[in-house]
Image (spheres, one colour):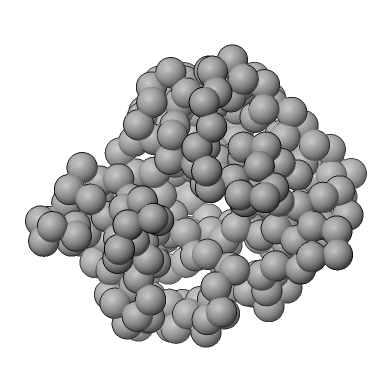
Length: 259
């Protein structure tokens, strides 16, 4: 039977910095279709950005900018009190940096996905969401905006006429309102590969996810995030690709977009 469903698998990459190495970028790239490349604020540096762009192009993986808050120590996962104007400026600055490397290597910027706390803040703040969407629209209007499924960020992108991809997470638990369980709370991360795999398959095939409270939440899944910095990330990527294939789900970047 030919696959009737499709899903994009994206991964946060290029998060090494100077002498510090993080993740398994080269090993995991064959299993994903979109790469979210750190732009130097929460992680990454010029050499890492260049190397990651080249690796992604070599594997035919879509190139995405992954702008975050200026917090290397906290890896961009701590909220900061920023204005919408500051959010816009940070995003334009970081997109510009990655876009330069993408163009220098002969590639195309396929998407933009905010990182960490910036992503979660924009998911619930219409003002921040609109600022980020405006930044993408001004710098790369042909790019796709990746945001938490059903969030203020995807709504802001759609309002501007941007291509948007509603994102779900393989290894994170959900709240009844469709937001992710904050990392500081118990059960925020799914550590059982079988549980994470089952969650992905249900989100993709049924459009539903079980919240921590036990409630079913309706969810749209265009792209699934795989975190590449975990100790078992590569093993899980292999497992998930096999499970999706067995379920007749084709893995490809969002329809209508190209590398």
